[in-house]
Structure formats: C-alpha cells, structure tokens
Length: 135
Image (cartoon, rainbow, N blue to C red; front, side, top):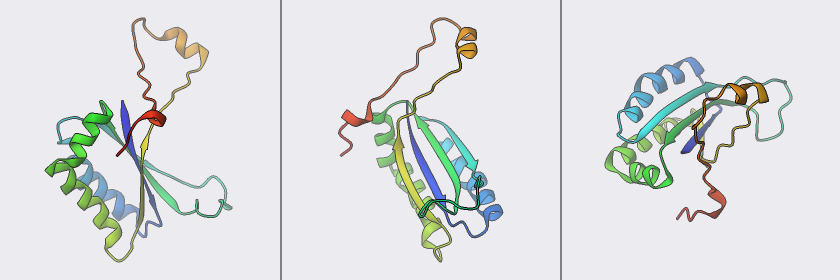
C-alpha cells in the first residue's frame, strides 16, 4: 500500500475549507476506482512556538492506493488530473492556502498487547520508497 499525503498551510477559513474539502474533493477522489480510502485530519499546534516553516499547518490529508503503479495510473488518468486541478485551485484562488504533497511510506509499530490480539495470517506490506524510481 502507498499513500499521498497533502499538507495544507495558512488556511484562511478552516471551517469553509473543511466543508468544501469533505463535501466536494473527498467524494470525487473516493469515486475513482482504485482509491482505497482517504483520511482528513485537522491539526492543532501543541505549543505556541512552532519551528520556522512548520507553523500554520492546519490540515493533513492521506489518500491510499494498492500500489505505486495504481497510484501513478490514477493520478495520470483524466479523472486524476481533474481532481488534482480542483485541489491546486484551492491555492490559486487569492493564495488562501499553501499546499504541499508527498508520497509516503508508512511504518506501523504496534504495542505488544495489541500484537497479541492480532489474528494469524494478517500481512502488512512494506514498500521501500528509497529504491523506487519515481520518475
């Protein structure tokens, strides 16, 4: 599994942004065959003093795909390009938000008690992004 993470910084109106993103963007993304799921997280700073460049990050989104190949296929499809334009338009309109995106490799570390409860036969696939050609 692979995911694309989006970081949204300097969101002017967080309520309006969330309303649009969850009612317009997410349904469009989830309607594309091959997209597994999306997560939308509102971020609140734990301290008032964030390191330079890391302040005012308000939203993190994660879009999950079966594989790197599936992600590439979807993002380069007509639907994927149209959705990407919808998302990037959020930043184009009066600079209301800054958007940064990343391809992410997730590593999950479980507490020992949780591992004891896992059922046998579950497989967690780890993709080594360091050795993938992302061109």
